Length: 529
Image 1 (cartoon, rainbow, N blue to C red):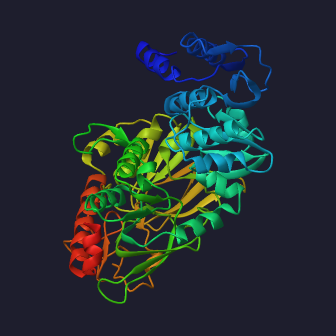
Image 2 (tube, helix red, strand yellow):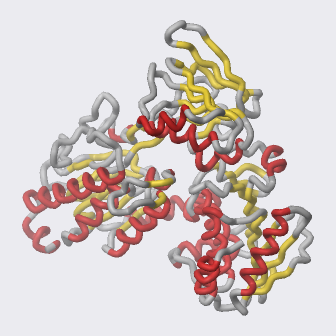
Image 3 (cartoon, helix red, strand yellow):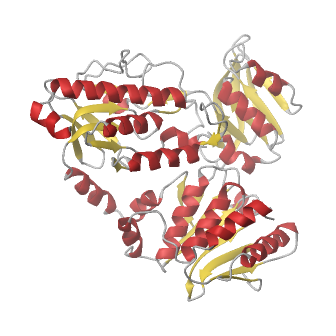
């Protein structure tokens, strides 16, 4: 199962184990069970602190639990093989079970330990899902640090009948005590917030007690991270308030145009950004969704950002970097069948539609790339484009047209997504040339029609927005409000690219620095210096 390089790396990791752990497998017949036996045997051979048994009798086969040898009541279960994106989750589960400390705050661990109640989690993932590892790792932490919590982490491709029976059509999908708990990416802090209703109030109280910042960045994507690093290096007290640190990068799979890095993946880049930000002593406030901006009454005054949790943060200068999100179709059936056949991430959810008929809506690079990827998994792909021609790069169009299981419908306006009450069954579209309405029978719809800037919360602030809702900025990333700057996909700057967002974030930070030294009281500037 593991090549020589992986074995050597894993052996080094397992050297961090502080106490013995046991792997207990429940196996049946077939290739997956054989592979599970092989994987666990190889892991056990790499450390004298790891033992493997194959006498488990759990109903899910193949599956295995990881538990401390000294405490059999504390465990986490993987059902299916946690390879692909989940191999890191497996390694972390081994280390955490064996006493190696996780890289989370003591406050988070104490929150887990003192959580009241009995919680049995079941979570479905796919091996190509880059959003799933965060949820897998969050539930693993909960199970290992609170004996009243269990976590069973299920690879959907191995348990397809179970996935179909529970109508799981998007991953990550998390069930709690047999009922649907959440669909989509979640951090351990987000899981705790859902379980503990007082967590939000406590977080708001802590944020509300913070001293004013020199610069407050709203948004934690590439633009926000770059802005934070630049202002912190100028010696300014810097805060980043982010709904989720990493932003849309967390939903990005392969990145091949980040200059000097031939290939990386969104979650990996987000972790690197987080580490770089941490090195500069920036106060990062995660799960901090902005609700209102109150601009300063005069240059050099204090701007205020009101958060949805009730806290208010103050700063001399503000950099808005709230990014963008996937655009919705806005047609009947889209909302009703979201995560029940309507999906937005082909990498995450594509494997759940193996052998089935799906549609991709959108003929830009994202749509055509999605159709190409899905064609290797599903039975048939219909790409639907509103325009009379595709807008993707020619090399992508050529690849798409070469695939035998892909149809392309041009000048097609999607009018409705249909279903049987439980899941998607088809799609209606109107031919914009003939006016004729047609129906396609299918089981999945992947929406890839561009982005919407996250600016709804700014509409009553006096900030100038474009007709598309983007923040209007000048060549120095300044808005029409003195001391308020903006960067990244949320602005009018063309070409929504990671490398451009980073450059714009850096520019906004330098402009914020210049603004403060020219407008803040002299004693404040001297103190910062």
